[in-house]
Length: 122
Image (tube, rainbow, N blue to C red; front, top):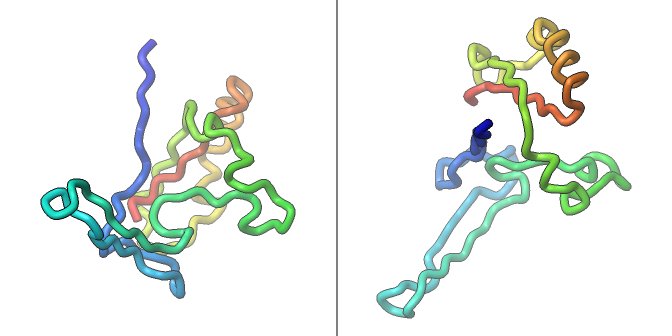
């Protein structure tokens, strides 16, 4: 059976939204092929810019850091809950997820590594 992989990351650019108070994304060319023989850029951003994963350490002092979590935990079968009808920034509440509870329980019983993805299109 062929596996399908879906890249969930968003492109970083000058319009990438950041959490209020975090530094904006910037990418400035330092070297060019024409002038220097190779391209090199300086990239600056906060650690929560763009598509990212918060490790437990982000909220728990002695929690696992991202480098303590095997990359294999981020690849696997998924259940996608489509909440794209919610408005930008609108809270996701239990009643939005409740219709998927039994399906998720069944999927987890079949494979405990199933990943829950919540689609918002934000």
